[in-house]
Length: 247
Image (cartoon, rainbow, N blue to C red; front, top):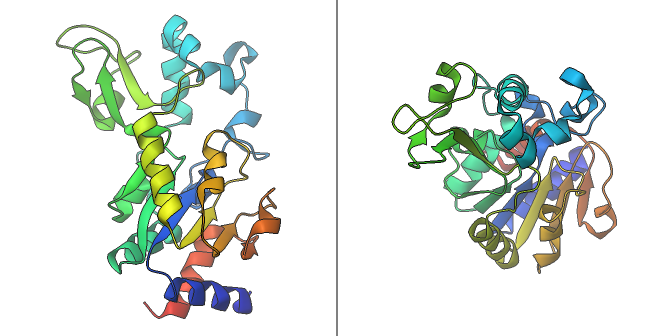
């Protein structure tokens, strides 16, 4: 792996407009489960044997709010999670003027917690919640303090997490910013994603550069097009590359 890390580090040295695109695998080393692995959220079953994909849909949120929120609070919220070596490395590379944007499918807010400033959250964030009536903001701590279905104490309307549920569209402004960041990048690092969830997975096609690095425990459909493909834990890879960069 030393030769691979050395090549990765050299590509970072040569770049000054790096975009990072990450998926659920970025946060597994922080104790947050992914969705599609053998032990992921989608492999589990909830009450009445309802598939998780159905529970986190807009329809289920609307018609079964009690069960939605019970599942959401138990399976998707990890307030104690801390950034791992991947999150920390990206934040440090941003401060160095190397990484210009992080595009993430994750909703955990760990990139910002690590110190990254330019983060495009394709699927929203569990840290933000809004009243469906008066649009007041509520934090993750506010939501956790409310038993059952969170309700706005001001207008008594339901509160909704600012995350993209199944059947909902991605925010077009966020997508546009993500596309612009990837299109302008002179290096694209993709990590912790199998590149099967669209439209997010299609962002790779906007990259116009010649330094594409893929980091995922398993092979992806884009490996053949990568300048470098690494099938190792992403936190370990970034820890070693930061040591190679001596920063």
